[in-house]
Amino acid sequence: MSTTTKLVFLFGLFFLIYGYICRFFDFYVFWDSKYFGWLGVISGLLLFLIDVRMARVRQKQNIFFVRIMVAVIVIFLALEGSAIVWLKTSNAYDEATGSIRSNQEIKDELGDVRGFSIIPGISIIDILNAPSSETLTFVITVRGERAYKEMEITIGRNGPVEWGVSSIKPI
Image (cartoon, rainbow, N blue to C red):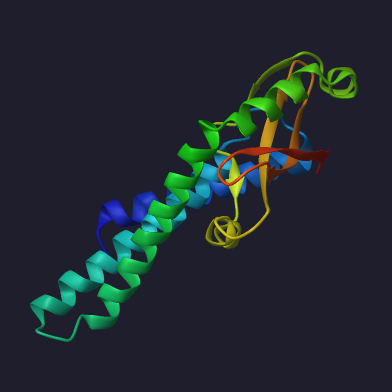
């Protein structure tokens, strides 16, 4: 295993653990590290498989299953990335964030809303079911002046391609 692979995987684990510890102890610094940690762990796994592929090629061994696993991870990352870009540019996301910003209960609990997470949390199952499903659920972190909170947002179809906010609830 190459040094780069080890570093990417270890940084991913560090960010992942840090993200969960921040949530557990209500430490309000870099809550997005959880999502970056998952990205680092998956990228480390991808780099590991690429290292395995190179070693197997040097030894003239079969690389079919390694190629399949690399393809699955690349497709997974592409689906997640495109879903996040689609979501962040959708009217439903703008409507949800606007609704959160104007919600008085959230303002009382968190203070004025300063921003939202860089990467919304979306399940791969929800992404795959989105074209045929009537709803899509994702999680965003709301950063307030006094505290942070994760909110689960469900959006539903208003038409064939238009989505609107169905519900917003704290986790």
